[in-house]
Image (cartoon, rainbow, N blue to C red):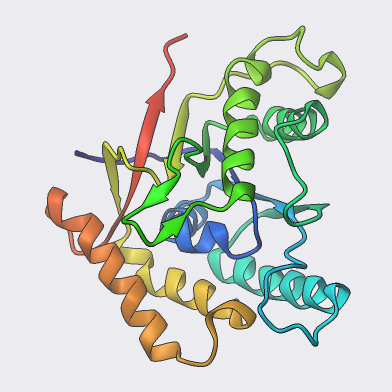
Length: 235
């Protein structure tokens, strides 16, 4: 594990659900936005199935989660949110999804792209990684390498653009950590904005976010960090 520092002019973060980016990489997104980076957040799914409460109809959940996403993105300083609106549980690494992602990456001229590691499936015998996370991750990998960088892939999706760095979250093989000490409170605030998902125990959620960030920071000697599987492309 190494401590890394990036100062990208443009960032694209691609995640499945409205709260995923804040939990996975909200500290980095907030720090980069504060330093002047143009930060684009792509949310693939509408979040309409993200509840255990049967009485709420799907449309209401989607609207609630979209409003929470807007609030969280503002707290992080995100430049633009792209809500793709795919139904929860129904996405796949399709040509249509890849074309959308390629067009956003090219238009933003993204130097750094973030998203979920699709190779991580089982976590500690207590969790199976959500299919939406895995499918989003695979679509992102194929969009970054090679599609976005090569002009004959999706030629109508804009001028080809090579991504310099890919950072994957929720990974079993982290090799890079980024100090988020200056943005830990912004990360916590963004996570708490997703009240439909985290409930009313704000103090408990804040402590959990700090604890996980502290755990990520220990191997590299900082108070709070986010860790990633990193690919730095050689052109």
